[in-house]
Image (tube, rainbow, N blue to C red):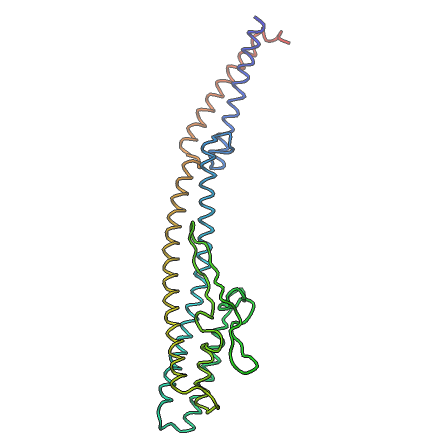
Length: 298
């Protein structure tokens, strides 16, 4: 009889203990907003939570890469727009230079304007981003893209590298472009083309003919136009991918919420049930403790 009564006492004590634990668990769910506090609460749910957390983390990284790519490509596009405007003016001057009635003064004025255009273009092809890296130098971002050599001709100083960023699973995009592919390298580059036209107007010995200088400027202008179209295509891809990632993140967060977030209506109801059950257990336990038989249990 003594063992049976003691066992009954311990069972009631265990009921109260478990009731307290369940009540604390519900209180934690309400306080934190998370219904799964630790893996032991629901191992399957925790596995899903970890999986969705990884998906969201990857999605956010892809989105950050898209932001970086958009900033760099927008900077490249705005720079090329200015290059295009400068080359258009260079083309106009080349056409005017073909006028046989030009005076030496007219040629001098045109040459001065070409000098200004050359200065503008030199600054544009050596554009730096917010981090101070030269936009068109490839992997050699710390080196100016173009500079004059000892002979007074412009040379490309970067390399042909392009930086690709991951914007989705198994999906990358070129976030930079080498100036060599846009403005030319070696002797055949956009700066030397404008300089050649200026030299022709000022009568520098052995300078290219007007038609050669004009054709060179035209070719570089067309390459800039093509590159701007490429950038526009990439920016559209980035916009579409950004929208797709935003949708994926929202869907994943909503699915994650079903596994992770507390249902406040359900949790509040559970809290009331646990409080009532615990109160009943305490009441029952208190009555048992008052029985005289328990007074003699060691």
